[in-house]
Length: 317
Image (tube, rainbow, N blue to C red):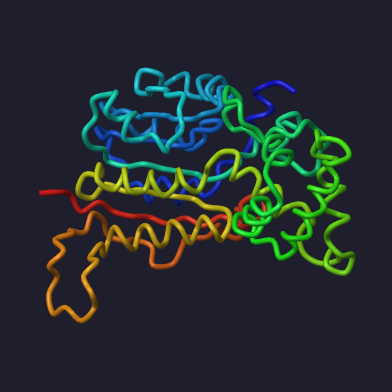
């Protein structure tokens, strides 16, 4: 499959993100999860003297996005890194503050479509799931080296999987015979672990476990929390941080992190006035998340669980 085909997908909540960013033609914007460049393209189109910093840890994404953004390359700086390193990235580029940032969290459409990457439970492939293929640690390591307790914790916490304990037991028992090398093998183990009655309704029985392992391999939730804190202090007054999530665990982290940016006070509730000195860094724009429209849901089924939350910078004195 060619790269252009791999990256032919519809950007989720595109209009809502662009509207939410309140793009200024001379502003500095960051796309923390560039992917195929759909959101990046719409940001770049609206810039005159401004700049877009396009970040992705997937080198395939850079190859595709550079083609898509070809008419605007003079306005774009491409960075091969993880958005969790945003503070270091901006320091390296000598950028002290930004006008906005977008993060589209989780696995992208092209990564799911590339069967050999091992993200999908629908295709048999080597156990991989690395968003950055230059890193040595993969899903194979999680499945074959983590002890039963850790597997249970990851699958239950990151996958919100009620059968996590049984799945962990079955994985450990199976790998005593032979290492688990492929997604197909893992799917069969999960199907054995999840009782038949529980498999009839709801999502594919492997969906939550695959999600959990992917999050562990790529350290996604740790990265998300850190990035929000680091971006909030860099946002100019009126600058926007827009984050799209695809499952409840990520959404809760974003919601709570935004709340803390708006109200960082750690004083006991009985104190009549704040004495901790912590100042708000942002204002929550979305009390409830923005969801895809009915029209978008019709043309892009992958948008069905997407939620957009927006934080506005209040500026620092």
